[in-house]
Image (cartoon, rainbow, N blue to C red; front, side, top):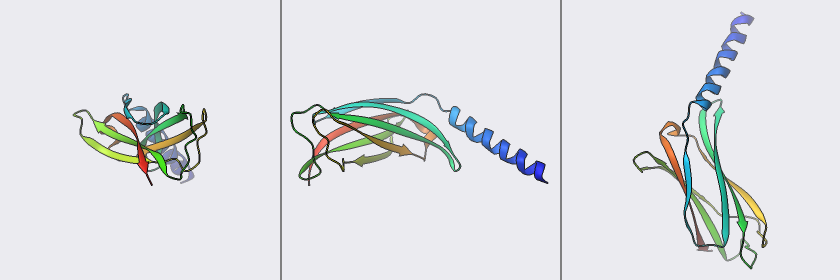
Length: 131
């Protein structure tokens, strides 16, 4: 009985690892940027107990001459996940919650846990939002 539990857990773990490795590459690009932010981005395919997910990690640097603060005008960074035909699968947006000084960086993550096998690319946009 104990042997079956161990073998079952092992098989499930291998299945999760294989699911995380089966994903082909996903291309990402910054399609528009109205802000003084510079973007560095990459994605990772992660296996989770509930399935596979893609996480886009974006590092933003304030290359402007003024600090960016959560009061007033702030940038909204949007990540759109697309399939091979360009159809939007999912979109989410974030705004910095902590100030970003001149020359400082911060990191944001955009996860996708649905339609993971259909994603072929993601697009990043940054625009000013008046609060």
